[in-house]
Length: 121
Ligand SMILES: [Fe+2]
Image (cartoon, rainbow, N blue to C red):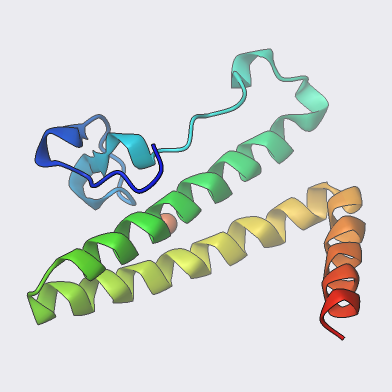
């Protein structure tokens, strides 16, 4: 599916969430939910919820930025980019909560940061 141009027929209304541009998504942009929440162990349920919320926000950012890049209407572009920026705040909110639930993630984030800094030295 690399470099496939999105066609109008690819657009499908599949949900109505306040973060999802009036329920319209490009079907092929949506991340698939990797877990069935009803099967998740109780003790890790909140982590999984927060990871899914982050995935949804990242999808929203990608969608709005791609739509903004597509339109020639400056007002629409401006608002899409503003909303995309708000979605980045939402990522931060969910990440903050996730890092309270998953100490291993806190440590691994730091390791990842250090590894990149070493590579880029
Ligand atoms: Fe959001």
